[in-house]
Amino acid sequence: MSAPSRSFFRRLALALLGMMMLVAVVFVALGWVVARHWEEVAKVIGRERQIRLTNWYVHFIVGLLPDDGDGDGVCDGAELYFESDPRNPTSRPVFLRHRLTTRGHSAGEIVYCGVRLVGRLVQDIDGTEVRWPKGFKAVVSASEPVLLLRDDAGSPTRGPVSLTANERGEVAFEIMAESAFESVSIVSETATDAIGLGQVFRQFPGWRTPPIPASINGGPARASFIPWTVAKGATDDEYEVKWSAPTGLTGDYVVEAAREGTDELWVGVRVVKSPETKMRFGSMLWVQNFSDYTGPLKLRVVPLSATHP
Image (cartoon, rainbow, N blue to C red; front, side, top):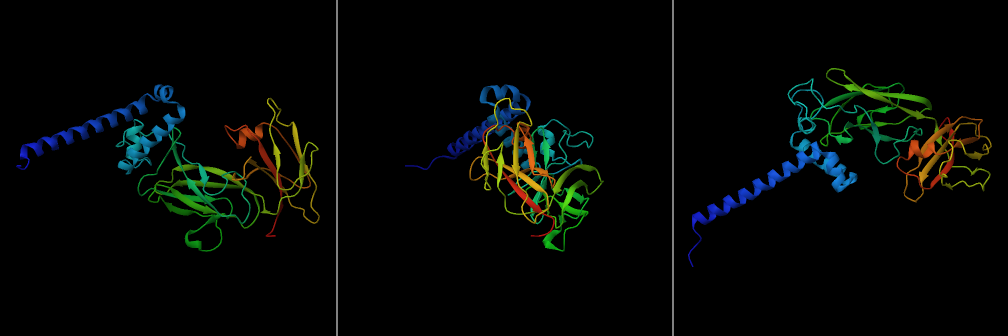
């Protein structure tokens, strides 16, 4: 049997190249449909799948074009996807400049003293989290000493702390308070031209101590947690969680809540100032802390200490 001729391999290569071009055309066309006709796509495949597909396409094109040619703080790939000019610094998609999130802990506004959190500055374009451009630099400052320097160099500081986006396009930093602060402002801006990226506020009310017994609407007192489900149409102050002040402890309290389940993170939902030993709540507790969730919660009361226990 003779070996295949060169023309056969040429035809095979052309056929494979044609298939690859067809796949590329279909891929680009589908991305265009998802980007420009997302409402119609959502009606066909559902909103959740449409969001996942959009995120995948955005991250794909941003990964291909992660640079920032015009220096406006948005990746060239994101600009192309969201129909702005990657060569014009005055043309860029509208994005939420600053949203502080944390990994491994609750991202709520109440943070206990001594708890170390990793925060991230997130660029959010039309609900999609997008990486910062390669080489992007930011400066973070705080109104109180809660920012940790790299390599654990020294005590918490007010900053400013200079940060560079990592390989994943994240601008990350660490926060921890060694003293109680009622409200701390964390502000960020670009390092090159000091354009503000926004600010968030966090409460550092004190050092946590073990939960204490509490009850809701006169029910049995429990220290571990109190399961509770909001009634349909309940008012915002229909329920009352109540407890007794521990002997010798004069600090404030944090009421924590979590979705029912053993693996859920507890969220500090409210600081209650001493000597008050009760808190009224209703459906807004769900709305403000557990969006799109109306199931049972578990609550507990955590006394605070102004100094390390």
